Structures are given as C-alpha cells and as structure tokens.
Length: 432
Image (cartoon, rainbow, N blue to C red; front, side, top):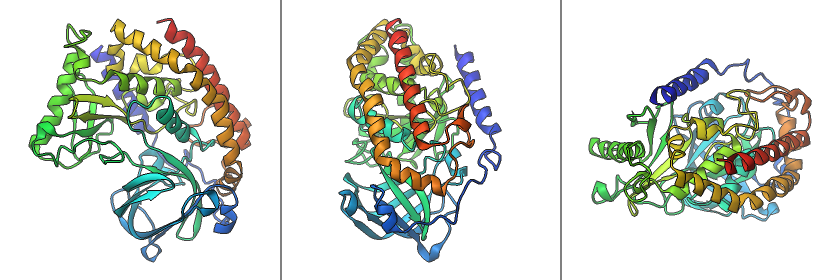
C-alpha cells in the first residue's frame, strides 16, 4: 500500500510539473479595452471592490506585500460601503497565479468586517478563471457551511474587482484560513504558555513550499500553515502529533474505538470533509494539495478541514479521470482515508451521514445552484465581456468546452454533472 500511494503522489507531482503554465495553457482571451464604470457594475447586483496600489504599482509577486488602499461599494446590493486607506496586497495561489486573471491576498492593519463576514485582518480575492460558472468555490462554501459544517469553513461573496482603475472581472472576496477567534478558533501553539496547550493548522501539500515542511512515515507531504515560522521545539511537537496519529491509523488495532485512530482524529470532521470532496471528485484532494487539518489542544484531536479550493472540482478538469461522474476517487486514492475505509464502523458512519444529508444535498444541486446562477447572470455577462473565454479552452477544462458558448450552458453542465455524480454516489456508498 505504501508503494502504491507513494507512486501516486510522485505521478501527481510530475503531472503538475509537466504543466508548465504558459501561453499554451492560458492563451490571451483578454479584452483589456473593456472597462465599465463602477456605476455600471453596481447595476449588476453584486458589490464592487476598488483596489489601488501605491503609485499604481503592479502586483508581480506572491511574496512581496505592496501598500494599497481598498474600498467596497456595496450599498446598492444591501451591504455597507467600506473604505480602508492603508492595507497590504500581494499575489497568491499556485497554478491560479500563472493565469491571466490573478488572485490576491489582503492584509489589513486592523480587523474589519467585510460584506457581512466577521472581522479579521486577512482576506483573499479569488479569480476563478478556469471555472466558467464562477460558482464552484461558492457552492463548496455553501455546502460546507450548511450541510457538512463539522468545522469552521470560509465564506465568500461575489464581487467585481477594479484594480488601479482597470476592471478585472468577477472575483470572490472571502475569508482566508487562519487561526483567529472568527475563523479556526484554537489556541495558537506559538502563543500558548506551553506547547502542549497549543494548536496549529497544517496541509497535505505536495509542493512543500511553506517555511516548515516534512514527510510522514507513510509518505504524506505535510506543510505547516499557521503559525508558519516556529521554533525547532514546536516543529518537533507538530511532527510528533501528526506522526503519532498516522501510526495509530496503521496500527494492528487501528479500528479500536478507544485506542485506535479515533483517539487522534475527529471522525465527524473526516466524514464531512470526505463527502464534500468525494461529491466534487476534487482532483487535488487525493494527497496533492489544499487538504487542510487543524489540531485542537482542547480535545487533543486532529480535525479535517476547512474545505478549500474547488475551482477544478465538480467535473471541471480533464485529467485523473475526474471529469467522469463514476468511481470513489477520494476513497481509493487518499492515503489516510483509504485506510479508514478498512474500519467497518467508519464505513457505516459514512453511509449514515450520506443518507441523512442526501435530500438537502439534492435540493442544493437543483435549487441553490440555479438560483445563484440567475443572481450572477448580469455580473457574469460583464466578466465574460472582459475575459472572452466561453467556448474556448482554458486549462484544464473538460471535453465539450467548445460547445459551452454561453454562461447558462456552463451552469447546465455543472448541474447535470452533479446530478449524475449524486446518483452514482447514492448507489456506490450504500453498496459498501
């Protein structure tokens, strides 16, 4: 098993390495001349974000913070306007940073509420360039905060972005995953009086590009996300907690309710995360990246989540067979979760959670998505006037993209895919 999963991880990394993000993957479909006014944008039904860097400097790096000012025009949409004179901005993302429509991170000097989302200093602007529905991340956030809400999950709001006077399209303004009273509410290990009373956020991430990274005994690539810069003593504490949990998961008595893997992992959060990502057949969720966990010192358990990064989920990808609505992709390929499925109690609990949530899930596919798409229709028209990509290939869009020449056709593809996936999972999970 170890060899099988190690090979899978290597192949996944090589796949991404081979996708040298360039003009062939992201051809120039940009209409730079299209630059509607804020007043025109406000009429489309979503707020307008105005972001201006000092002296109009270009944001060219994911590492260098730039001084900027920020405003939200939200009054016409039922939100309070907001003006922030000084904040920092930089680029963010991995493959998404290579796309023409760039995502950004925001860092405020003082905590602020945005569009009804609780106060914090750290925020993100997600571009959703490859997702022509502009909805996949929003939909995942909706599911995680209504149906599968075992942990805190980030919220987002659709906005128009004007950067240094130039219209950049429809973005999502949202909450960044951080330790915070209004986000992952745990005691920060770097600020705790003793390290055994502190918690942290970590990610399974094949890129290994954080300050502190390590690989577990089973070959799982771990990156410490928050706090990011810690002492050698804290690094060792983090490694010990995660490795002990993994060892228990692969121990001879791993399914023992008291002393097996449940002594270290929060089962409810694992199941909620699993169903979210299995539904989406989220390509990165099989040991590659954006797989978040946090260790809570109050219950001494590793919780799975928050959920993150669904722009290439729900059929919006052309590799790893993740455009197909069949196969239990996460179960078969995610190292830790694959092992949990050898526990009959876990299998039974997955079935119970699926069956207790499948009705609201089905309603969300056929009610929430069409309603949200309708509310975004005017804004989407403006976005695709700026980015003329409908009916054109943008990495890694699945086959048939050339037929989907309208926003509604992309929405139809999404709902059809989800309905087929729902039907498959209903049979496959109950048949385990």
